[in-house]
Image (cartoon, rainbow, N blue to C red; front, side):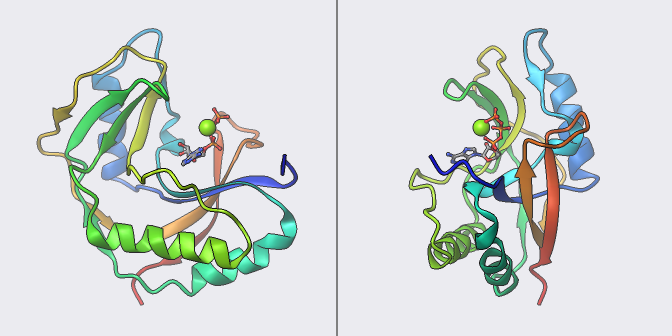
Length: 175
Ligand code: ATP
Ligand code: MG
């Protein structure tokens, strides 16, 4: 198992008012056995890398900096739950083309750096809570639009504070 190195992923990290609306959504759907994500941990994963050996980092940083896909607006218009993994999520009704372009560019870049991207179908979502009861998929009314102008590289595990992820670096989609 390639367990050497930090566990990394590329993601979109919301700022207010989207992050605040996500926290309000968590509160509205709070249930006692469920474990809500820490407010600072709320994110939408673009590409999961797993454990990355340190020698891969320069290539990853260079390929991320070279990405030239356009900024876009994400509309989180759905809430629902999955059984496996057991999570409560918020997500868009469909994957916007520029989001898929960004994900594809990252996965292409990962291969170029000698890493193997996830081959499961991409399902954009923000994990609101884990281990709760099932929730039938619903439309979210009036959720703020999320203007996506940057993406980040984050690490998981190893954060010493109450939240579990750490944003390592950000890149702009504005150029
Ligand atoms: P743990 O797995 O220890 O419970 P976690 O799921 O919070 O913790 P990671 O597994 O490191 O942390 O995942 C980091 C991010 O990458 C999360 O958004 C997670 O949903 C996503 N992710 C994890 N594994 C995969 C995978 N195989 N494919 C796609 N995304 C993944
Ligand atoms: Mg996990």
